[in-house]
Image (cartoon, rainbow, N blue to C red):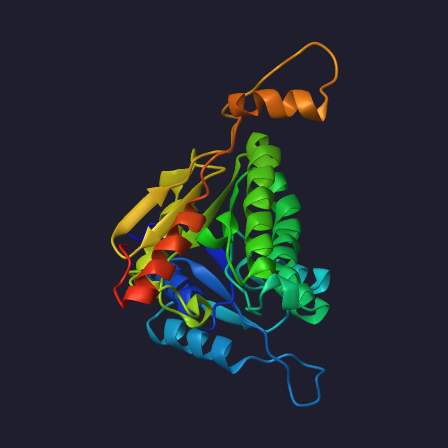
Length: 298
C-alpha cells in the first residue's frame, strides 16, 4: 500500500520540474491526481496544456489515475476549477499542492509594474485561489491538507523583490490557514525547495542543489496520515537534507512609561538593537570571492 492510497490530490504547476515530480510521486503512492498546468488553445476558448496532458499520460501508463487541468491559478474561477475537477473526476479532494510560479527578475530600482504584478498574481494569489476553493470542502469533511511552496528568498533576495514578497506572503498565508483551519482537522504547511528547475534561475555559485524528485517525498509525507498533527511549518528540502524553519517571535524589548522620543530611543537602542541579516554576510562573501576568483563557502 502507498502512503496516499485512496486520496485525491491536486497539484498546480505540475507540467514540469518540481510540480511534475510531486504529481508523479503522489500517483506512485496511490493517489488520484489532478495535474494542473496553464495552457490555452489556439482560439483561446478551451484551455489545453500539452505538458499537463503529458504528465497524465505518464501516470495512466503506469497504472495510476490522473486528469489534466489547464486553467490559470491567477483567477478565482481557475482555482475553483481545479478543486471541482477533483471532485467531479474522483468524488473527493484530500489535498492541494500549489507549486505554480514564474520569475521576473529585476533590481528594485528598475522593476516595473508589469514585472511585479504577474509574479505576485501567480505565486501568492495563485496559492490563495486554490486554498480558498479547497477550504470549504475541507471544512465540511473535517480533513484536508494545504501545501504552499515558498523559497529561502522569502528571507530576502537581491534582484527578486517581487518573488521574495510573493514567497513571504505564501508563508503568512499558510500560517494563517493553519491557524484558521486547525479546529476543522485541516493542516497547512510550506515547502522551501532547493532543487534544479527552471525556477532556480541564476543561483549563487557554490550552492549545492538537489533534484526535483528529492522534494516529492516530503510533500507526500505531509499529505499522508503520518502528518495529521503537523501544521504551520516551513520545511527546506535539498537533496537528502530536510530542515525546519523557526517560527517568528519577538526576541528583545525595551520599555518606559509613556511615549518615547527619538532621542530616548537612540540613547537606549542597544537594548533591542537589530538581528543579523544572513544574506548581507553572504553577499560580502560572494563579493570577496568574485574579486579573488575563489568560490565562497556554502
